[in-house]
Length: 251
Ligand SMILES: [Zn+2]
Image 1 (tube, rainbow, N blue to C red):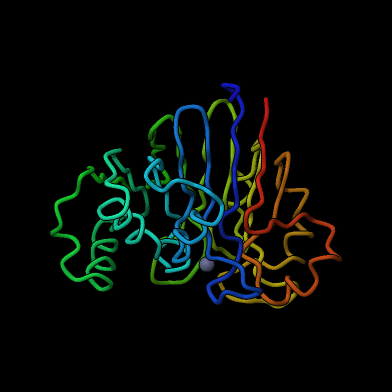
Image 2: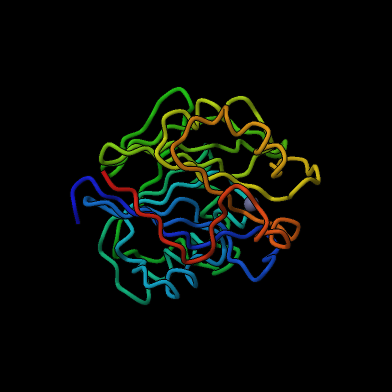
C-alpha cells in the first residue's frame, strides 16, 4: 500500500429500517498506519464478515451519534474480541460525550455481565469536542455540531489522514455547518434519507442538489438511503454508494 493511498469500504449504506436490505451505517477506513470504523451500526459485524474486514484489526471506531443504526454494533465488536478472536490490539472508541456510559448500558442490556468480563484488550474512550480536534491512531478527527434530534449531540466528522480529508455528515438536516465540514475534503459522504420528502433531522436529495455548489469537496457520495431514494437510484445525478463498495483515495 502506497503511504499516501487510503481506502474506504462502505459496510452499511442503509437507514435504520433496513430499507432495500441495506445494512446500517458503517465505513471501513484503511490507511498505512491503521484501520478505523466510521460509525458502527447494529449490523456492522455481519457486514465486516461479509466484506472480509477483520474485526480484531480495527484500532479506532468513531461514532457520529447515539442511534442504534450508528453505534449499536459496538457490543458485538467488543464481544468478538472477547470470545471469537481473543483480540489483543487496543481499541479506541471515539464519540460524543457520554460514550462510555451509553456503550456500557447497551452491552449490559444485550449481554448481562459483559462489562465485568476480563478483556484481553484495553478499550479506551475519547470524546468529540467541536472546539478541539483529536489525534487518534494517526487520524486527526474534527467534529461539527449537526441537526439531528433534540435529545443528543449529533456530530459531522472530518478526518485527516495521510494528507487526505474525508468528511462525513452522520445524520442531519441541512445546516450551514455542512459547508465548513465539506470544505477542501477529498471525499464527502453525506446522508440522503429521502428524495423530496422533508423528514425532520435528515437531508433529502433536492436539498443536496440545490446546495451542491456550496459543498466544496472533490467527490460527494450519498448514503443512508431510505425507500424513496432507493426507488430512484438509477435516475440520480449525484452519486450514491452501495454496501460493500470500495472507494480508493489516491495521492
Ligand atoms: Zn441513522
